[in-house]
Length: 317
Ligand SMILES: [Zn+2]
Image 1 (cartoon, rainbow, N blue to C red):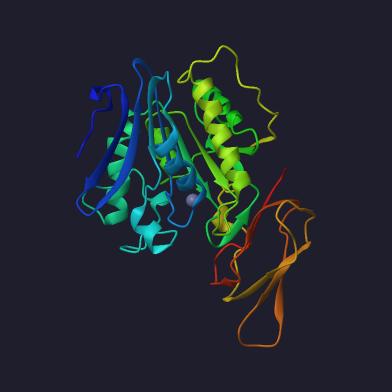
Image 2 (tube, helix red, strand yellow; image 1 turned 135 degrees about the vertical axis):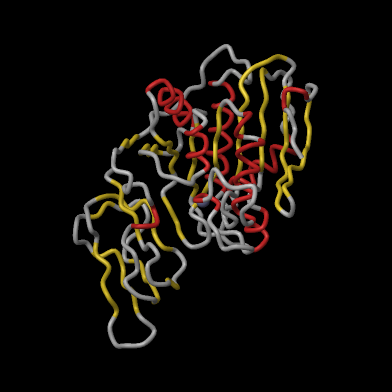
């Protein structure tokens, strides 16, 4: 089904979007006067619970007295993966964050990407994708965006600054993401990464809630006579596409049991011991050493690790 947001009357609406056997619930707040169309979703990956927790609460409780424009929230974008408790959709094993802009004739993940892109991203003027480290990782929460033309980057930086409890990591285009589809549509977009560990840290939910409320004011959706007071945000902008590509750093050289030797947030020098990987057979654990100096911003939390999966990401912050 398709919904032209501009034809909805002012007020709160719940709509389900479907394409065959895939779909998602969306909540729409329509203001009485025109303005931006802000789209926010959680659970692009099914094992990330912070965004869904907050957005589902908003759907029940947030009833703004005055709204200029439209807010659309999709608490759980990837329902198949969410109910399986998995990062990827169990129907085809595909990663929704590598499937954009999708394909209406593809598998469930490609069809879901196409549905979200054509039905909602196509109508958005601003976009926020709420991620986390999921079940298998823990991270130092951050916000980020794909760098674009200067005018779009200025907006993206203002949007990221709203999430002022988190640091900001901006980098070049990577294909297949929700933000890649927004990039192609020239829609200013940011993502947020919460702590993960398969849980919901209340500090992260409060930080997300604060960030989204700041964003509503900064974009003019919620009228305010004063600008929000934002904490100064540590930012890192890179031109190296691999730097923030989290799945490629310190890959496990073989299957095994990972025991970290560092904590998330720690600064390490090049060559420092990050942890050990113990194969199930054989006498010795392999030391995993830092390939560069930096701060531990993501670390394997789940102890079992298949060969090739990332163990640790270090950022130069
Ligand atoms: Zn994610």
